[in-house]
Image 1: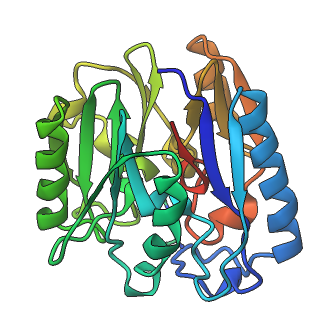
Image 2: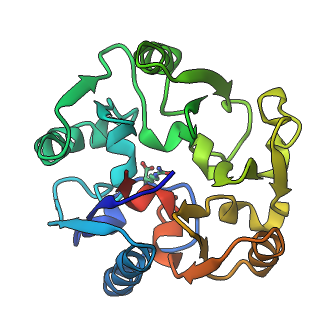
Length: 257
Ligand code: CIR
């Protein structure tokens, strides 16, 4: 898949008031801004045109734009985030996406769905059922995708403690290869892929991000970096420690198509 565009949003000064279970301390907003610049520049280096949206102080988690929408081919699905404090983010994102996409669908109540639960593997989508994405939301998205000619399956991660979203644990790197948290390596839906198993002590780094011919890897996870490099991928380290403190990873910080 060739990506040309990305949407990102600056972190707000209220960033530290967002939702977190990480117990890694309070993020430093000035370092978060510096890391955001590094992230945008890595996306640009991978060939993307990046839209940089202004911060939204009323939504501390709004830097994690991936959760607000799912992009599938020519169309976009506006999500209904599982956390009440994040639901209004989608109202801010809809007009931005309307500049690029004619066909806009929506997840409706009682469905909830976060974009971080959607792992796209070419024309196949794995939809995580999680603390944030409920069965109603996952089934709504699967129906929408199937109507557009894609295939989709649901993968329930609710029984695995500490995994917020499916893409916290499973990410497609291209060439039939996925990077996977060891707790999901035996899942039947993942058996047909070449699986690179991230060591449990580096579980956070399962969220690497493939963009065109680059795989962005979070800084500070040397075993995962070697794993991805030795599998033949060109890598780029990106520092995201302040986002890790708020349970966010590399994919969460952008919408890409
Ligand atoms: C949240 O709990 O919603 C944010 N603090 C982190 C969201 C991370 N998003 C993602 O993994 N797609």
